[in-house]
Image 1: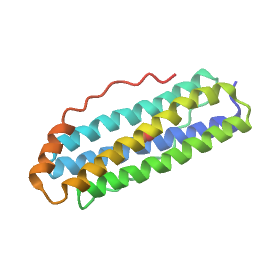
Image 2: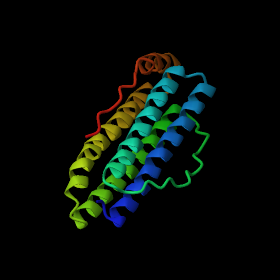
Image 3: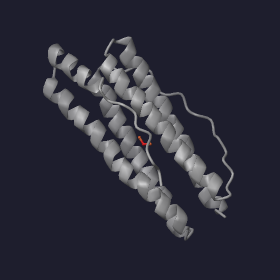
Image 4: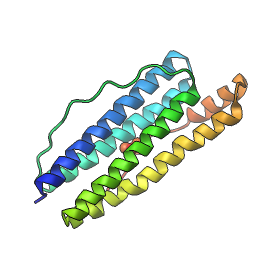
Length: 169
Ligand code: FEO
């Protein structure tokens, strides 16, 4: 049976993952609005990944006899000035989530909850990938600068991203 403290911390992280889903959905809407549909596709995949992250925690809590408590989701930002600004915000958000995951591991250690420590290892590794993905698009956008043709080529690349449901275990 999971402790109350661990359960509360996981419920907070479910909320953070669902906020991430909401934030990326807002970014998707922005890209659809400015007609960068490959970028919008990239965000659509990200939205699905965040839902999967939230549901992984949701399922862990249920399996451990905890109580899932869904909290209010904050309103995400809706306007950015460029694709670069969007991805800088995405990276900043992922760095924030990494900090949250690390804190969650600390709670699991304090609670001597070995099952949660082992389970959260997947999220620790996933955050490395999340930061890497956002940062690599930032680097591409910086190289592209004001070149609209190059931006459209990157948009084509990002249109190829597909969602593969992660196996969280
Ligand atoms: Fe669920 Fe983007 O981390």
